[in-house]
Length: 324
Image (cartoon, rainbow, N blue to C red; front, side, top):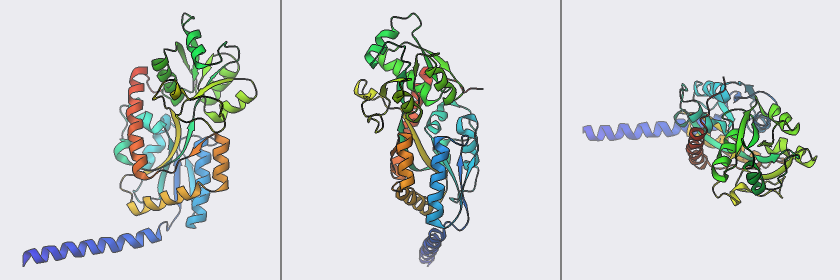
């Protein structure tokens, strides 16, 4: 009799759980959604989040606000999301910095692998290897050879210690034997000004800032860092074609706090994928030199784990420490 009672109780619990999940999925969202961007307003991550917020409003009939919480390489905003209720109403729009920070900041009060649910990789944007026109190198091969003729190599400006632009340079040093003296700047704008001004020889800016300067003759592009060619700089080869396995990607992605209902994650994912076909999103991708992705949560989770492992090795080689 006890076995029958236990089985009946278990079945009743399962039915109640299923019946509760369905209305929850149907009513979500019942109030405004908050998308936290862990960087300052005006950057690519912020602009993409605002485009998504508009798509969410049109699809869900609820306001989706964007809240900028910059600091500590994106960790302040990430922690805010992680500490929020896991109900799908607070989301994180971030970048490859989430994978880098796992190793760059060894004493974080959270673990991104455990405390965040990867919902979807929204877009992928390459970095472009550039030189100032005064540098007598028109290919990666020539750049490597030139660097070896100088006692301290060539000056290399990055967006800051531990950024993807810095780590891409470290990886290039390892695989190509390129001799570089690293000069970190406080942000992409400062690094670009110094590169265009000829204060540094080599830079690895995002395509959005590199492309207009290449087109204007202020910089010379040599290659892109992703495994595929850039749609806006199609003549540039990939570093992977010269050094197999080279792949540094300035990606954008959406996360939820661990514990968020699967039905909600599925619904958000579906809406993001749908939004990638919208004219505004396509215009953003073209302007940023980005490519839409829209992979599944499982695919993005696997990609995120692989990115963490990749950057752990590069951070260790670089000896990078967080900027203070």
